Image 1 (tube, rainbow, N blue to C red):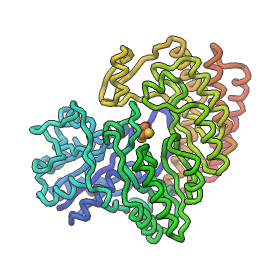
Image 2 (image 1 turned 135 degrees about the horizontal axis):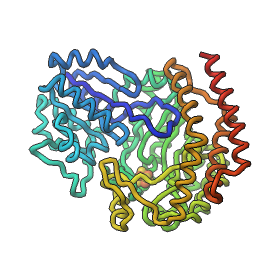
Image 3 (image 1 turned 180 degrees about the horizontal axis):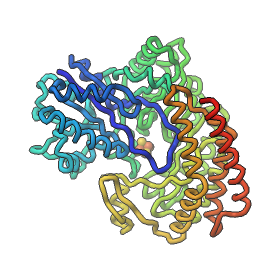
Image 4 (image 1 turned 45 degrees about the vertical axis):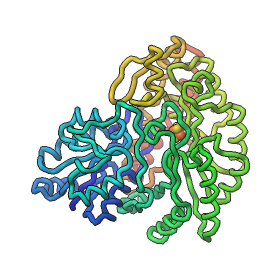
Length: 495
Ligand code: SF4
């Protein structure tokens, strides 16, 4: 069988952030499963600029491929993915198109109704589908995890994606040299799912608050294989939540640490986890094993919102665990949702006070972060039930603030940011993008980034306390503008 797999590019965000080069692991696992089943797989990654799309369309026009798969893991790639499906169907009407990924699974019925170009949506993990469809010679009607027009999806009822045997497949790694050339690290999937059950999280909906770890020795074996092939010892464990928040996950991490001890290679890792899974015994051990950076979401210290999120982390506990991590020199990248429908101005002050105590572990964009109420999540239903929903679309629910004072702060801050720093953010982004296109690392001086972050903080505090941007902040913004011009000019000279 000849299969074309496409990773669409994400839509341009309103607020640009550092352009990244990452492996689309969902698609690469499916590619690995097709490969293992004996299919011939081609990959086009529109985000990484990998593959020749025009050549692929030439082949499509002659009916070369037996099937085309388009990855729809998130809202960010939705419109580009659908446009691609239409173009392919126009070019090759007889070639079946399937799609899959978290977003596709949770919105399968909508996709089939909105896009006649898509023939079939794969529910849940795609590896088993890939292996079965090769055996069935492309007849997706014979596959249990496929839904199509005569067989509607189950997305109206509680639906948990089935765990397939996919964890045993090695993902396709043909994109990795490009990712490494751009200064990024290989992605590894060691576990899937999360027992956390946060109400706003798509993972809870997709995996049903279940967690599963791979054989720890096999994960280490994969790390060694990648080291031998690509010479890298640094990895990104892109698990939903590595420490899983379940008793079996606690056992698993211990098995993983001892499997790492049995090798003489010193790997280093960054990963995502929950703060309340990090106990004081575990921290020194993960440090020894090479964990350098943990991405941790605390979301908010508002008691009311924590209750809505089903995630309760006390500020004092957070501070003490973060202190231990700092002592052990494990870096942290903090996640927080500053604005949500229930937050009060006091909550904003409290969250900001916490961030002031931890100045090094968070990025400026966190200050404008707001709750995304994705379609089908529990938080979306809560918002609807409490009459705070304004608009329910495929991209999620647009909500309103319960407190008019919070709404006023949000609007002021948004306006302050757009008038004073949005242009600067785009300038930085363009310089970084230009560097990446030449396979250079997009470096921005740390002192300049510090200035920019401080400007954001000043604007946030002005929005919290006053009607307009203070004179002190205005003076600082003037310095920042001068610095930005210097930075952009310097980058042009390097070009
Ligand atoms: S801990 Fe993280 S991955 Fe787990 S449910 Fe909560 S937000 Fe989702």
